[in-house]
Image 1 (cartoon, helix red, strand yellow):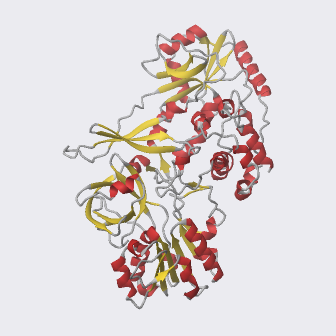
Image 2 (tube, rainbow over the protein chains, first blue to last red):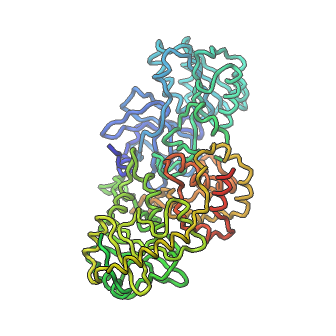
Image 3 (cartoon, chains in turn brown, red):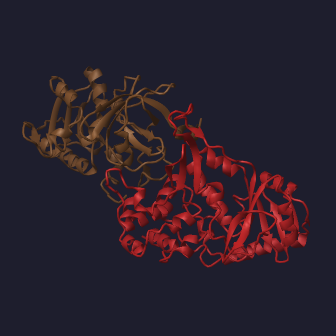
Length: 277
Length: 345
């Protein structure tokens, strides 16, 4: 049956159950799902709507197994997200979704998993980690590389510290510029690459971050022997409708909102890093 | 197939007589140009024109359309409830639309009505409309409908076709919708054989005049990245002002933006035509803009119309050959030349 976009275009009203400030410009919203329920796959996004201000595509950062809450982690960049940062518990927000493709976690059972996140790119990858950690025996070695601007910008800091304590998860964090007291790595996320060990025959990589960061990460992974059909990337474009009608997110012949945001690199290799597309 | 003969006066009266059944839009002379306006008793339609300056796109797909409304008063009992804005889909007729502009609707349709999604507003608006076309006796210098799957008397998307026989109009029903429309139209007399022959001759003559000389046959076989990296884009886009005139005049450009408007306690969620010619079209919240140079935006427009659309729908180019963008581009960028460059690259 055809979906009526009238139903897809009208936002559902969700109440904010928790507002948590992560860093000076990043925050997490925990929403109660609409009456008809809500489920998503890791890597998908919602269109979040502020009445009278506008709507933005934001990936879902919660646990896909937890259908009782919708969780979004947002970095305040533009007019809408900056206003969202002033929201409070019990206030309303409009939600449409979930939209887009997802990280193919079910197809990757038995594989080693490498996650590489740049900045707020950690948010759409967190559901993957939640899923893997709940189904830990079904996956091989799991490795997360996370690059941030400064130590103060690290998101999910408590969670990351507790994950670091696990023996079944390798986790490396690096920052572009350090402050006094930082004892970790300094440098862009690719500087972590030389020291990691991958089994190129069995690893699947998922990347999310600025295009330039993914570009250099792909170069490093290629050096390590990964093929383009083992690498998944999550793309970003300006979006309005979320279902491939409005034309804004067109990337060559594909629409990032509908055919993406998660792409298998070998499918879009010819489109990737063409800045003007 | 009903064929009825009217004099121009009879035809105008007949159209005025169906206002109970249809809201009729017809071309009206407005300064130096013609535009589609709702019919009324004071201003008579004028069918002596080459084409209207604006296509009839806005009559099906408004330039600015309210989708939803809501109250921004937090104390109101209906606060935060989004309601669909009431819309009017009573039958309407667009009389005097040129076959190229009607063809435009069928080019746009798969975007709004396909396997996955159906835009109820576009579809209802289109389906409640009778397209009463006016054949082109004399194709103009900028149009090229015959090159892109149309023709000066192309009946494919029309419900009724009008032949301008000089002294009279011959009006022909083409579809069930069109025949129903003609049953409501009063006056006129059944067409005689001679008029039908004359009409056929007009169509044949016009078809001879419209040459299919804009090549699009090889576009499908091209590789996207080859075309994308072609050396001519800087030249094609050099003079472009990114004014967006081409996209607004185009009967086949459908991109839209969604904006909120708040007045007092009333909020509206509105979709507006948008244009890939504008830098804001692709600007991210972070300030990053994937298409930040004008030639990149010009390339996007032509690649979408002449390559991406061709590949996606396997049904020709996203252009109906009306020639408006050629005629009104302030710096004379010509889609016919660009099609040739791409086709021959």
